[in-house]
Each structure stands twice: as structure tokens, then as C-alpha cells.
Length: 244
Length: 298
Picture (spheres, rainbow over the protein chains, first blue to last red):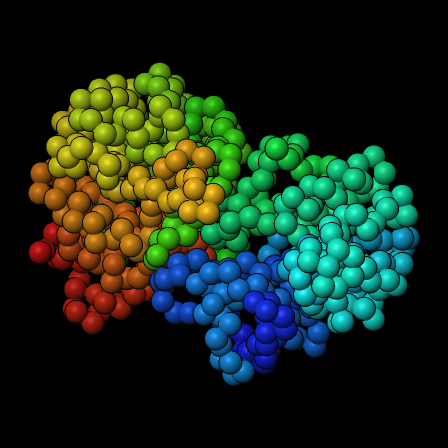
């Protein structure tokens, strides 16, 4: 039997950038890069659903999650302090296929940078990361020790290249690309890489159950509608069908 | 102690997993033995395989959620060949939830299910998310009555009709369905509802409206179960916003023989076990020997 929701104790819960929080939990956690947990930081029935948050890192049983303040659920979690309890279900979904060697690019947009610490620690090739943000860059200081180069783009030009992260990278320089971020960005990455280099994209969608039964989080793939929480969240770029 | 009887079948307890919230049982069986449930309703089936709706399918609301899945399912044959063998091996009662876009589709679905090992057919005349289907049959009594009558003629399985709360008059609807031959009534399916993205100035859902479920609808669904219990004599299965044993007991006191747990399954995979345990402790505490004693007691 898989574990149902279990308790995690908050070790730290800090705002590392405006509206971006780093939550570290103590408990019995495991999982692979790209997998996620459903988290619930409240007993009440409102908010009704738990929140899917991808694993940012797991080290010595401690689970690190990076989340963006978006609605009621994340707002409640953001107010929790060291020692407070959370309920967690996971690890869920299929993570990234890990490549042992070669030239690897990680391309992220906004809070899509979250799963890339655990991923970059788990890769053994030459890894470059390209991260785009609206304004302030975050979390990259923790990823830096595990990659060769860090490239930053911001929409307002406050850090690094002013513009889109996709303008910074050349697919022919790489053997494999991992990406996570807003849909339009991942769609652009997949299009740029088409026919040149394989892409693994970690998809996101509204989610209710997280375990594959509600069919709420499906996306269109070349095989039909598939569940982000079960077949995903990581899909091969060429499998995902985008519409304009 | 918690066992109940519906149309000749004994359920270990009155807790049934609701259609569309439990898949075909496999995912949940990884979290708890699904045989502990009184029964399981399949995901809503249509005669032919369906990919369901495009666009956003799930949207959270205060103490509830809206969905517009659109009956994504493997079709009746796909269910019978690929999903039912797993469920059949489990010691629990199986309800095949059958939707349709036309009378003919319902009837052909029933023919296939007649030859399968399911125990019940739950006739879904209440899915709000399929155009010209499902719920279209569940709004007006005369439309519902004709579908139920034809379906019942053909069905070799006991047939529960699942009502929409969007029916023009829930009591008249239940009465018409029973007159037309329904062996039991389950209610309610989701409430037709609307949410708007005020920044895009557009509805959240491609179909504009979607079905609302969860604790926020419970008091309304409970009232409907109560009202229906006053006009029909067949078993009633209460559905709507059940997340605790206390909710299930309310439905039974309002007149339900059994209950279905729907969106509650999304917030905790083994929530049904908590509900079953809670019903048992309540019965012990209150010295209730059988749920018969409190059914429709209010």
C-alpha cells in the first residue's frame, strides 16, 4: 500500500523573493526530480483541495519546496512557522528521465525553477541553466554549485538579459533540454528545439486529486488526453499538443 | 452492523464511491483495500470512448469545486474488457454509471452491460458537461420518463437513476422516474454553475458553465434527498458534499439507504474509510443496532 497523507513538520518557511517562499519540512520524504507532493496546511474544508508543489530538493529526509503566493491555499501555508504541521501526499507522478552524460540545458520560467535544484544535483553531464523571471531572480544561488553556467533573463532587465529566456540559448549547443515554466515559454522551448534536441517538459495544470482519478489535469498529447499528475508531470516535448 | 440492503444486494456499509471521483478503483486500491467500501460506481460511461472536454476542467470554489471533465471514458466495451475484470475480483458491489447522448446510445450501452458482471446500472441523466447529452434528459420529467421507461424495459440489472439537481422540480422528477420503472434513485449530480475570469473578462470554462460539487452544496442536496424521500418508496442513495461520517448520517436520517462520496475522495484518498469508521463509532455511541433504525427519522 502507498502512504496516504502524512504529516511533515516545518523546519523553515521563508520568503526568498517577493511572493516566493522556500519551505523546508522534516519527516520521512523521498522522491525523484520532477515528482511532486500534494500539500495541505489546513484542517478546514475551505480551501477544499490540496496544492500540488514540485520537489525542489530532498536531503537527509528534509523536503524542500518552492512555492509562489497565488491564492488562499498558498497564503495559508505562507503564514505557517517552524514547528507547525502540514499534510503531504506523495511523491506523485513521473519525474525527469535522468541523463548521465552530455551537454544539458535546463530552461526555466518563474517558479518553474523550483524542481531544478534536485534535478541538477542528480545529473552528471555538463549542465547549463537558463532562467527567466519577471523581475528578481531567485533560488539560482542554490543551483549554481551543481551547474556549469547560469544565464538569467528578466522581463524588466533588472538582472541579466532584458527579455525572454528563450532568446539566450542555442539548441544546437546541447544534447538534451529540461524545461519547466509557464505554458507559452515551454511551448516556445519545444518549438525552438524541434528536430534538433530532445526536450523533457514538466507540465502544470489545475489539479484536484493528484492521484489520477479526477481527470481534471489532463493535457492533450499525441496519444490523446493524458493526466499531468499520473502520466506526467514530465512529458517529452514532442508528445505535447499545443493549440494557438 | 453497518450493512445495508439495496434491491436484494447486501452492502457491507452504506458508503459508495461516486462516479467520476474514483476512476475504476485501481488508483485507490494502492492506498486502501477498496473491498472495504459498500460499493463503487464506475466513472461515467458512454457507449463510445470519449476524450472529454478541452480547456480548464477543474476550478476550486469556496468549500467546493467546479468540474467540466466531459465524461472522458474508455467506452462501455473498454470498461467491460479492460477495467471491470479488476473490479469484479473485489468483494464489493459494482455500479456501472451510464451516460448517453441519445436514447439509442443508452439502450446499446445497457445491452452490453446486461451481459457483464456489474450488479447495478446507475443511469446518468444528469451530467451537465456534455452538450446535448446527459443532463438534457434530466431537466424535464417527460424526457426523463421516456428514457427511463425504455432503459428499464431492456435492463436485466436493477437500475438506479441518478438525478440532476438542475431538474425543474426534483420531487416530480423522482416520482416520474420511479413511475417509469426506476428501481432506485440516486441524487444529486453536480449543480450547473458559473465562474468568470474577471481579468480575461471570460468564463473560466470553455462550456461557460460547469458542475459544482463539494461541501458547499451539501445542505441543498440534503434537502433534495429529504424531499424525494417523501414522494418515492424505492431506495435512495444520497450524494453531495459528504466528507465526514456526520454528513453521511444526516443523509440517512433524511431518508437515504446509502450514500455516495464524490469530491471528498480528492482531498484524502482513504476518506471513505474514515467515514465508514465514523458511522460505526456513531452507531456504537448512540446504541444503534441497524441503520434502518435512523433512516428517514426526521
